[in-house]
Length: 312
Image (tube, rainbow, N blue to C red; front, side, top):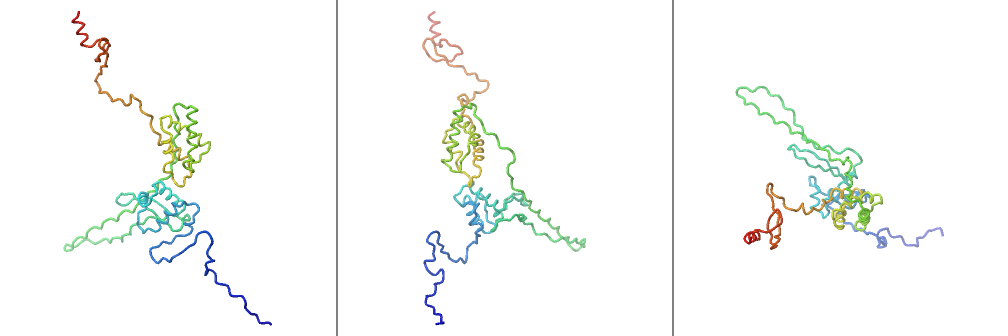
């Protein structure tokens, strides 16, 4: 009676049956890579502050060999995203510490951009210094040559070290004021405010507060005063928006100010210029035969004057 007997069958090891797969969500089917692969950390692939464009761009840059060109124009030729979106993604990677860009001057005078990619985010340490040319060993002062010994050739001076040019900083000057229309009517401002409030239907990221609309409405009213069509204004304000868009009011202020069209020219502006010293005599209609003739004063044409003199 004291002997213990195993009656229940042993449990199956975990992960050997189909029941171990999740009932919903992603199911991974992984194959082992032995060549042509890149190791990416989950701190990048699961980054909560980076956009998908920035994460994908970081993966692409880390997979490139050293010396590959990763300029904005080169990346825009490789991918369907615009130069504006690629530039915004590069700034995201710089802010997160995965990328560092600096400008350096080469010995021949050209200024190039040096890009340093990190597979782990930078924790605040200084950027690596630019590579310096190898130091040449000090030349030994030779004794004066003997009459039968040729003089040694002078050694060339070492090339100058590349000079790092700091990247351009953000603008510190205040932005230009929002343009105002010549006739500041309530109807014009009401139409401009309605156009600004309606932008969120075209682009959900363009949600403006009432204060922002009141500030930007005079600028849009200036566009309307200059006979700009509302569809033209919407396209100018919503085309090719950066991703992510952190300050929609500042972006709209910049576009309203810098893309403002000039007023339509009048009839006198479109008239051809007259040559200096040339006097144009206007046309007159003859009081008798209604024929057109050039004269400074109204009256009769040449033929009517001749007939009048002959009759007299």
